[in-house]
Length: 184
Image: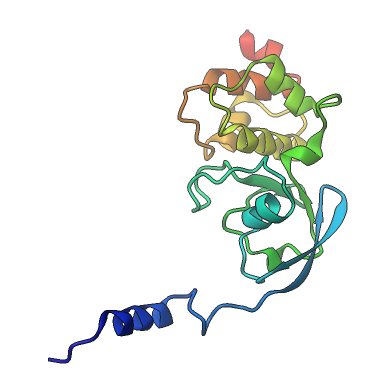
């Protein structure tokens, strides 16, 4: 039986790991279009978009939730489609239009979806809010008058652990101009 020192075992594991020195892509300048601005970032092409948005561009709307693309807290719009930025490498975003929560509107002039979420007080802790708003925005961009069922379907993969689902649905329906119909 061959014994392996701790360092040798770790080195072997790292060599098999996709993040080892032999497989890491080198950093390079990557040009991204985010919220209408052009940004050149120095990062490895396989870096998750979420990390570049938060760490390099100081855009903190997208949140790190699960890191697996399952909870929706990191959602952004890429060419108008809601996408999970924690699992999308930045090299796949070159030449595409990326919009974060900050790019929708401002404090003084919020986007209608943001305004609806504010008016309905559709948050408790607010951690899921980014994903809920971005997913609602993407839905309304492709279907300006969705039914309640279509809103439910669009938001079903966004997790809210606080239980603000009723307020979130009311906000999404308000943004769609369908709140009165939903209350009947």
